[in-house]
Structure formats: structure tokens, C-alpha cells
Image 1: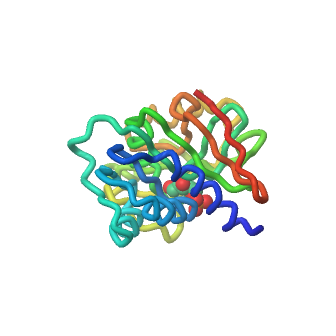
Image 2: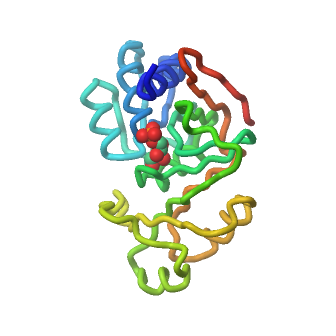
Length: 217
Ligand code: 5RP
């Protein structure tokens, strides 16, 4: 069983949670890329979906999954997304694909946020880096304030919202709540990639041919 097979298994298990008529947030990444065909195969009706990235939106549309702007729906029944790291107590690091700003907005709007992962994603303790999205207004001053622990991600395009994608490689991951608060306190930081357990409902991790489901909150 390859890692890609594990991603597909976790995604297929999560696709079974979606029911006709639901409002659904679609994450971003190679695991979510398996979710979308699994969802399309379900043949559900009256879905209303929002996408966390242009790539997800394009793939969903190509499969016949309806996607709308995220500006009229106030709540989502369910959101499903991948992760870069997940701890046993449900802390995530997301943003390997630079989509963490929209991903966090979608997760926060969801009644149920389900994380899908292959077996390389669970960690005993967060390792980082922590992705950041920085406003371009005042960017030099933001980078100067954040210091040498933060660097723009080489080769990363601007986010769909015009932000610069950067990464934090510094101390503090042993206390993710404090680090999240510190990063968010800077007015130049549009989003940081630490997702707290209170955002997370369930985690589906595929190992070999099995999918382990953990309820967080
Ligand atoms: C994108 C993300 C992804 O969900 C995360 O990087 C995991 O990606 P993949 O499923 O490709 O391993 O946060 O911003």
C-alpha cells in the first residue's frame, strides 16, 4: 500500500459522511484530490460546496461538483481537509499548500471538521515549520518584526487573497496555543497554520488498508 493509496482510503471514508443537501467545505491538497472523485461518485443531489483554493474549485467543477463563492453561506454542515501534521490531542499544522487562510475560515464555519491523513501525518509533537500568510501591505516591516525565524517560502505564488506565503521555523512548538497567539498578534500576519483542537471534530488516518478514526471535539 503506497502513501497515495492511504490518502485515497482516508478520503473515500470521509466522502461517505456527505449526504444530499449538505453544505460542504472542500480542503486543498493531494489527499483532498482523492476526496473529490469519491464525492462525485456518490451521485448526491443538492450539494452546496465551497472550495479552499482555486485548484480544488477547478477539480471539483471538472467532476460536476457544484462550487459557489463563500460569501452567502453562514455555516457549513461539514468540511473535509488534509493536514501536514496532527498530534494525538488534535493540534494540526496546515498550509503546506499555502491555502491555510481559506482552510481555517472554512474549518471555523463548519459544524463538523474532518481531517483526512495518510500514516506520515500523525506526530507525537509538532515539528513545523508553521506556514504563514502575510499581508503585502507593509511587508518589509512585518518581516523585520517577525525576525529571522520567518522567511518567505521560495517559489510560492501569492495566495488567492494576494498574501505572501512564508514559514516560521523557530521555538515555541511545545506550546502551540502560545505560539499561535504570538504569531496572530502581529498585524501583518493574515493567517498562521496552527489549527487548535477546538476546530477539529474527527481525524481519519489511513494505515495500510485500515482507516483509524479519532474523535477530537
Ligand atoms: C494545504 C494544506 C494541505 O491540507 C496539507 O498541506 C496536506 O496536503 P496533502 O494532502 O497534499 O498531504 O494544508 O494548505
